[in-house]
Amino acid sequence: MTPESLLISRKDYKLNVFLRQIWIDPRLDFSHLSNIDSLELDQRRIQDVWVPDTYFQNEKSATFHTVTVPNKLLHIKNNGLVTYSVRLSLTLSCMMDLRFYPMDDQTCSILMESFGYSIENVHLMWNPDNDVIIGAAKDDEQTLPKFYFYKPIETLACSTVNSFNVTFSCLEAKLFLRRNLGYYMSQVFIPSMLIVMLSWLSFWIHVEVVPARVSLGVICVLTMTTQSSGLRNSLPRVSYIKAIDIWMAIGLLFVFAALLEYAYINVQTRKHHKQPKNDELPEKSVDTEHKKKRVDLMKKARFVDKVSRIAFPVAYVIFNIVFWSVYLSK
Image (cartoon, rainbow, N blue to C red):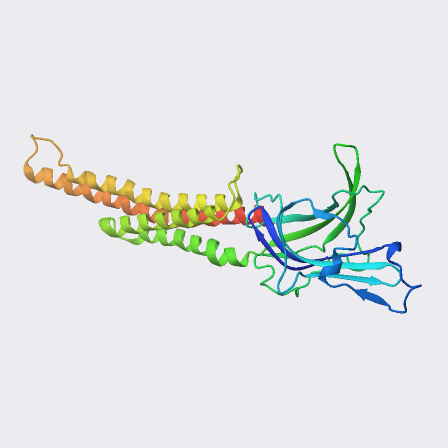
């Protein structure tokens, strides 16, 4: 079997393959009748020759290629050796575990089995020399835009028993795939890191510049929310938490915390607008006390900003160290 291309999407993957099958049919031995080495049958005569009833167990949809004629080949050697090849487009299911997404490894299988003939009549085996051949070059990014093979393809022979206690021969090819991080680093991780860092700029803006600090915080929160929503729409709904969910949730938490930090110091600094109620003190003393309280509150607000300038980056660096250590050391 020779896959031409491979496309992984959600919990299935698509293949364009040449399925090649070889067997010996003694009924087609014509060495005693002619000196011709082999026969190459056209499309009209292929239907007259017996072929195995192979099907794909994990197939979700499949089509034959018929341009400009049906893409089928059948050659018969004079000793009865039959070579049958057909070109197919397949969509196969793959039970992916997305807990480590996008630092995940996936194992997808190609399962083939005889549909109607028991193992006594049809016994499927891999060609020991050419079992599964990847048709495209190894560095062809159009074939695998988001994955690469981190282990050689593993081929297995197996058997299954149906509800009628009939044993059928089957074959399995395991594809060991690892997701490329380049796309996610450039489109997800680095942009979200920059958004979190952008939210820290509010710690350097003066406390009384309310429009600038509020606008910056709200924009960062909305941007993180939009980016997270776009990622969720491109993935299947699963009941467990993925690595990308943790990354986006913590990033949103840092951005939201920066906005809450300003909300806190803004409430504290606005207290100076409330005049102290003390009728016994002269008006000059009241103003002096009010100004002193205002200065103290502004100092506290600036102190909170100074602490945040250090605390937020340090906490985010610690999170990054823990996150990448856990998910890259798997």
